[in-house]
Image (tube, rainbow, N blue to C red):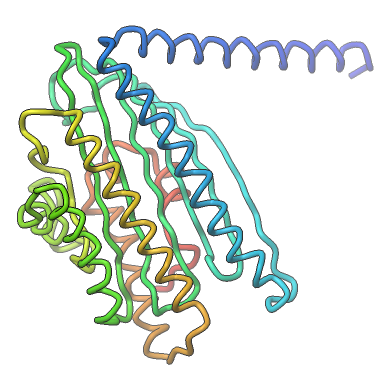
Length: 308
């Protein structure tokens, strides 16, 4: 290929990329414009919250890893980002790896239409946001934190989310701290944890118990009836606040335990937990196994190492 043809090829490739980005931006704007004024305010609040959370938690993870690089000769911090598109959603995945917090994965899904098996309403605008954190220390389990917000053609609002830690070694003091953080937030907002804690432990009717993950049951699942039956906005604001409270508390545990000594039994417990999480994603969780492409969910939430 001569120089002129090469330059032409690169130019056309860049132009195609620019038009694709412009088209997607236009589509996102059109979906926002299709919302009522009140619903648009809520949607834009979530967009801001996701960016703020990204900035906050990746900075927190990077600070922990960067401070410990001298103690881990030869190790580096990597930060990778990629997009994936399906008929139903556009995904953006960010994965950061380091010596202390081995892997932090973030998934952002922009819903374009209702996925199979997720109801029969026409989706106008939707977002799914998740953060999964895998510390190297086996004394702190992996975090799985999600938040869902959807608006439909009839102007109804659907909310959801999931917040808990999958422990290997169970340290009662730490599990109680996460549970108390959750309970305090519910109490401050005049809500009852009973249903949502049962859901985080048991899962919904869509999950298969035999392959199910093993959460600490310190957190809650919002994949059930809305917290406030009379207001989708209030339910969203509640879940958003709980998301921040729980992830903050979890990160404090990571900092607290990251230098503590541990045993071979602790490592084995971590390996068992990580293996169990993969099995859950393959065979139990309907969102991972039936809706999201393997390339997406595996990058976002699977542990950095899994032993069989």
